[in-house]
Image (tube, rainbow, N blue to C red):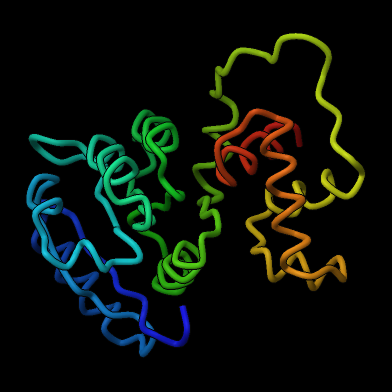
Length: 211
């Protein structure tokens, strides 16, 4: 991102929540809140959405849910990485957001440090999975089993995929395995292709489910 600030759009129908997030994020020198919206349609109409890096999206909003908004963003603004803000009892929104293309999800009561780290990770294109929710999501995943013989990843692809499941970025994986970031990206792409998965989030969940 060449040293430019991470531009964030906040989408939540609760004014108090948006104001609190705004005040928290404006304390970070590398993060800039460039827009706020109280609904999905209002978010899509924001002039600053075109230049945003990350959208923090509330799961439950009237008119257009967070999942529906994320699906629109995935289709119309794929460069905007969406994070779903959820509570502990909204697993159905988590499933929907992942299928819609969310970069990840975190709880609304996450610590400020966790929230800021999640925004930075999402801006880099990394997967963000809140550990408190992930185990419940993994337990309820009901994707049909793959047809035919099981897909075999190379030893290195498997190693990279396991680190993706821990939430590690490409840079962190490269340091751990003494590889270049480009090589890590190639291994991730190969694993996604072989397993028939769409993105790092699905790869992380698939490996986390396997243990």
